[in-house]
Length: 227
Image (tube, rainbow, N blue to C red):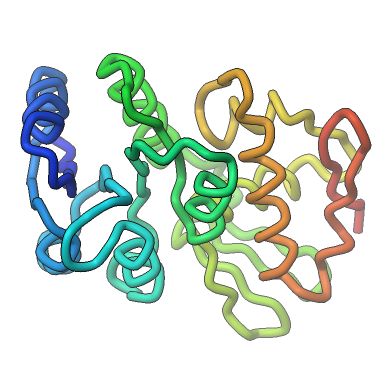
């Protein structure tokens, strides 16, 4: 089935460049050139992935991302931020808001399409036959991408869910940052170890009383405590 990708980008040349390369990969493409229209289109069409610029007229990219993650219809749609703002703080803010990846302009269209393919493949990856996981009072439903703690649902992005699942399915074993990048993000990329750290920090915050179950193994990665 053809995947639909929404591009929210105000620079016409870049918009057309990304659109061209995505269509060449047989994706169906929707476009918007300001944040407000892009958000409306996302809610209306529910694309499989969104490529989102930060510097937009109307709502900026960060506000669009916030709104997407607050809406139950769009909170699980993966977001790739595409922006000229390459400072580390900008990348971290985007990831903290729930973006799944971050690409800085100028960029390689091939790299962008490879990352998009990896993200979509990750979301389509077949799950194991055991679709229910329990860790004390933490309950994971793999099929529905839902998590509960003490019967209260916890709102996670798809990337956060995948990260939690990868860690909890490997209880007691250390997962290196490179392993997590490969299993959760679908690729490895120099300098993106901090992406893992940012998502782990956000995941710990969301799972509250179970935050300490995710142990930091200094210089290596992370380990989920055995129950």
